[in-house]
Image 1 (cartoon, helix red, strand yellow):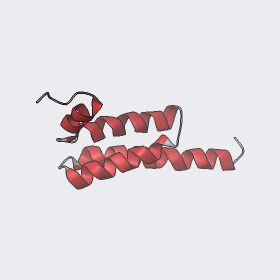
Image 2: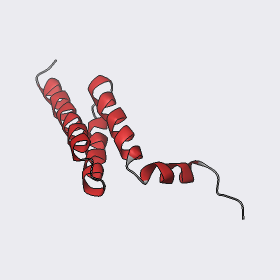
Image 3: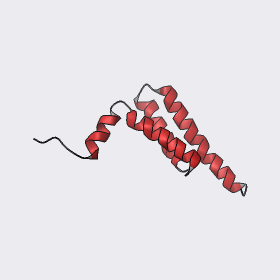
Length: 82
């Protein structure tokens, strides 16, 4: 049989050791601070999955906290009227 091609097998291979959640969380945390704060929720989810599935607790905490702070700070910015 042919090996499966496409994005699915690549993502599964990256996700085996948590690399996908780590780099996805880092990218989401940065995007939440710079462009779109809603990405902070994605960073929190990625940090939670890293904490839950892997042994990378420090990286998971940093990603989750960065995302968690970005979203409420954006809401506070909107509430205060800029």
